[in-house]
Length: 400
Image 1 (cartoon, rainbow, N blue to C red):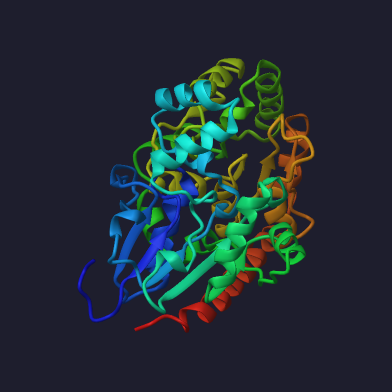
Image 2 (cartoon, rainbow, N blue to C red; image 1 turned 90 degrees about the vertical axis):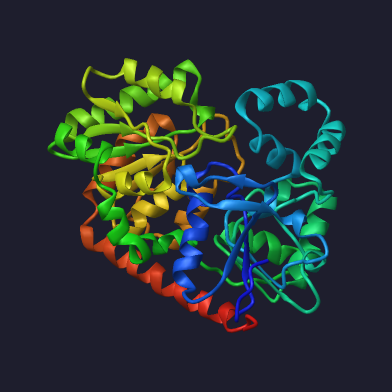
């Protein structure tokens, strides 16, 4: 590891793949903890600097020189299984092949995934004291796990052991908090660190409003909505519902529609579906945003009149900028909890729409656009204050 007068903080999370929020987390940590030395660790070694991310080292590559200060930076880490993690770290064609081969055999799938990642941890982004040296510091910062009850019991036990060994744990929503409390683990709430995006990076994000973003502002002089949806919205009926709802919003407001991807990893967003949706919308109403750079995505949202989509961090960056937002529930979600809903229920006023099905998209977006601007500003300021108070508690535990 790098030599430093201060012990490096090893930031650990799912920023070894392309996902908007995960790519943003280490930037936020480095900005919020000035004067520190950092290492960036994931499950595999990757260089995502071309997308505005980081050069990431595999956590297992440290071997005997284990980190002494390991910070789980955030995200839905508590319920990401070894199978899910392994597939999302593949290229799309390889991911499809793995799913075709193993999806009907959970035991073989988990064994294959463990070999792929070089770890037997059933919840691989959750590391306990075995992953750090000596009496080092172990922190879980605003982590999520809304589908905790769906995780196999043995995996929950392993994750609970790691959480119980930590020097500090905070969770980002009331569903995760309640699920862990039922297991005998009581942790405080902390909003997702992305609520600090505007506070930390407003100047950088404003400077990024060139190129594609500038062209969009010129193309849509009344403004635009930043729109996103995952690959699970890809059936024909759902795409029809999106087209109908969004076209009515655009016609009623004069706003353009900009379709952006919040993640290019497997099981995230599918560029081909955006092209299909654009074809189903009136000519000139929508444009597809091509960039996958994390700063370009931030700039796109910050310059918008509001955000609608299934991405939690698309919603949270809109929150950080005091913008209207509404979230979409995937069509096959059923009764399973939704992390966007859980976050909004925990941290946002009732006046701001939460998560809705595609059939309700027009009503939700119009309601969001009608919310007074001061409601959004006050909510963002409150969450910034809450986040900083929480972070101050665990940074006081770090070793100099």
